[in-house]
Image 1: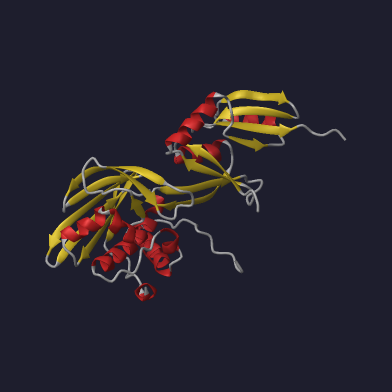
Image 2: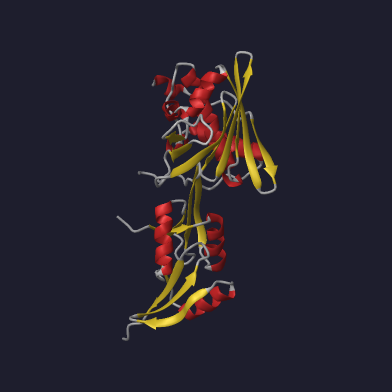
Length: 190
Length: 132
């Protein structure tokens, strides 16, 4: 995938944090040049999720009450989370949990495509990392739906990627949070 | 190959971090997240680059069953070594930890056992000094 080598994410953009006491929620808004139906399929169909999402799903997420196992990609030990779809209104609203986090996707039809909004109540210490990760995932999703896939970029692939590190720093600055001192700088000669 | 890490399952990583640092006296070493995954380890301030203890979230039903079963059998989920078990016992107890066994002589060692508040028993061990 030659496109992948040339991919550089744009600046941190379109994200903010909703704060309710200790509970912080990342809100990410992205306009995609694809119909809500197409975006809905990418958010719910395991074959699509495998191409862009930070997890694999063993079933379709598009039906309320569905129980699906989500496997986090690149976790340092295997992590499978039992997930319950709590709300599915195609092609408008999708809600489910990912581990202890709640995720909500909203799709609005706009001229020429879809305004996609994600709410994800990531722990505040990792919220800038989450924003950087989702930023790249949504870029990958946009290219996938546009017919020029660059391949999923999540977990260790994202963290090694200079674009992710830059976005992490930019979002941390926008949100006013510190960056975790991890991962450590790689040792030399390794 | 080295033994660099051991793991205890905990029912709440935040609570565990407080207990293992503020009550037991370890120091946070790594704290990193990937989606719902949180890689959280502590190390001893006496050996900051020594073996790390991973505080792993026990959201795994078979692992939970195992954890509860060995807890009921009074089996420790982890064991730490000390040169001053009486001093550590007093210090940790003063910080509010509940011991199920005060320092007690065993074969070749003195042991004590406490609850980590996150589903485990922790054993403290002081090896008997070999006489010269």
